[in-house]
Image (cartoon, rainbow, N blue to C red):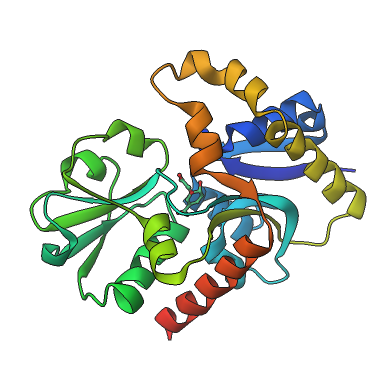
Length: 251
Ligand SMILES: C=C(O[C@@H]1C=C(C(=O)O)C=C[C@H]1O)C(=O)O
C-alpha cells in the first residue's frame, strides 16, 4: 500500500506532535510534510495529501472530511500566538490586515468583529513581511504562529483572539484538527492517535529535545498554559459554535 500523505503545521505549536510521530516510529509509515496552515488546508482540499493538521475553518468545505484524532491545536482562554496587534486601541482601528498563513484565525477575527466587537473595518490580505512592515497607525493586523514571538513588544496594543473568544462565549477555541479527506482504515487512525499521544504525554521530554533550538522561549508555559491539545467536549462545543458563526458570516 502507498504511504498515507500527511501535511502538518510547521510552527512551534506542532513540535509535540512531531516528537510523537518520530519517537513512535510512525513517521516511517507515512509521508510527512510541514507547511504553513493555509498550505496544509490547500493540500488537503486539492487532495495532494490524505490527512492534514488543517485550520478548522476549511473543514466544512471539504467533502467527506473526517476529524480523525482526539488531539488538536486549541486553547482555553489565551493562546499567545494568535493576536491582533495595533498601534492604536481597537476602537480606533479602521483597517485589519489578515495573515496569509492562516485560515481559522482570520475567520475568527471577522467573526469577532461582526458579532462581538460590532465593528466595521476594511479587510486586507497580508503579503509576506506585512507583520513588521504594514501594521501601523489605524491599520491593525492579525498575526499567528512563531512570528508572534518575533514581534513581542513591537506594538502597544495586543489582543489575544482566543481570549477574546472566551470573553464573549465562555468557550474554548479550536484552531486546527487532524482531518482526512477520504475514509482511512481504523487501524491507521488508531496508530496515528497513539503516535501523537507519545508527544502529548511526554511533554518534559519534548521540551528537553527542542529547548536548545529555542533558548529564548518558555516552552513549558506555551505547551501547557497556552496551547491545549485534547479535542475534548468543551473544545468540540467551541468548534461547533465557531462553525455556526462562520457560516452566518458567509451568508
Ligand atoms: C494557535 C495557533 O493556531 C494556528 C492557527 C491556524 C489558523 O489560523 O488557520 C492554523 C493552525 C494553527 O497552528 C498558532 O498558530 O499559534
